Length: 142
Image (cartoon, rainbow, N blue to C red):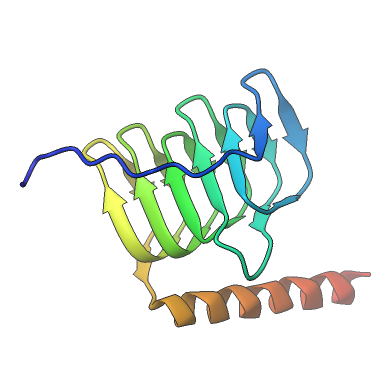
């Protein structure tokens, strides 16, 4: 059983960011999001769902990721909050902290930051607290 490669079912893709696409600004979504391009901004899943983000080996995200289920095989510069599950594939590169409930990490994946385990309820509460902190910081600077 050890060393056996397991493929997890990738859910339905509702939104696709193509390889030659660059998106600037925060992206909020529900359902499945597949990214082959570049996103400069935060990627945030709608609350209360079991949304899924898949970042291909060509994909880049420069910002925070707050999605319950994540499969990374590209590059993320920012913290990743996966309240349910995260899979770091062989070409995954995260420069930032990874907050997770369940973690699968392939040989070759790298995290330049901390891996912080949180129980499912704790991860969701941390997300809400961080959102409040961001909103407070934004209102103070206005």
